[in-house]
Length: 361
Image (cartoon, rainbow, N blue to C red; front, side, top):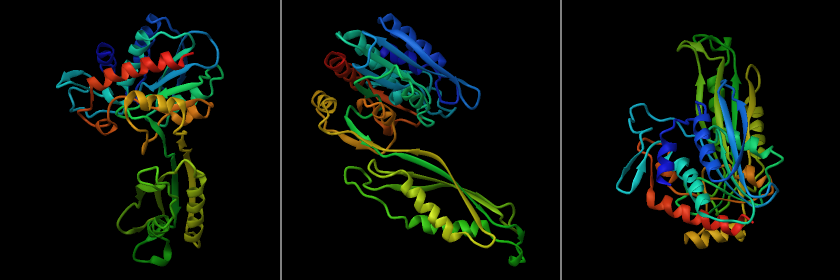
């Protein structure tokens, strides 16, 4: 497992570059373990080649178990000299992607080498999870991929995850009218109108579910841009709004409330456009799921929910009984000095091997 992990961490698979080099490494190792492999390949919006790898061992039929993990990573600070130079220290392996998500990929391959099973096992390695689960979206469109159960790899500290909130994004453009700041009547400030809209957004009532932390749908305006000069009445102000809806909540509920708020603020020279960018629903799997209970018993850790998104909804959309699970801590990911505890990664190999023997039937 450590050998595989070191090889994967040394390959730059940040989402801005092609993931084909890491897919080649995963493909080579999967075929050496007796898997038949195929790829879904495409060119992204920036003209970069991307691919999902789908490896199968056992009968070519629906059912069995899939171990699904994303191959891409977030960018790293150029000053972090060890980002692509995996280093073992104090029982940890450091490097970009060590926790998120290459330890799971290495554990899945190692568990496949160890486990025996009578049925179908899939290893699935996706692209572009970090920029919108783009590979998982394509995976969900593959009519030939229909596992009965799936373990979706993420750094959860070996805690089985029941689900997470959705992720929604909208761009809001507040249009006013430019004018000389000495003559307010010549224009209409898009920035001041955006300020009124912000107060409206702040009052949106949140749905609640105590299974989550925080136990409500969150909203955030993360980016505001507007204005040309200190003495020009701004004619345009743009806002980027995100909200993370609870699984039982309609993803368009907040969108509708925002559109109603825009209608109240607009008028005269003020016009507001709302363009949804993402409307991804949350997901919550039953705590009594056989897969969840199995992972709970093997890990000795009670199931939880998480505040960040994963590829779980796309597996659930296939009718697959799925659970998020893996070694590492998400709080150590997405930062310089990312690491995974090697003992935890080795324990993941043991648990995944047991899962293969139990569910790849």
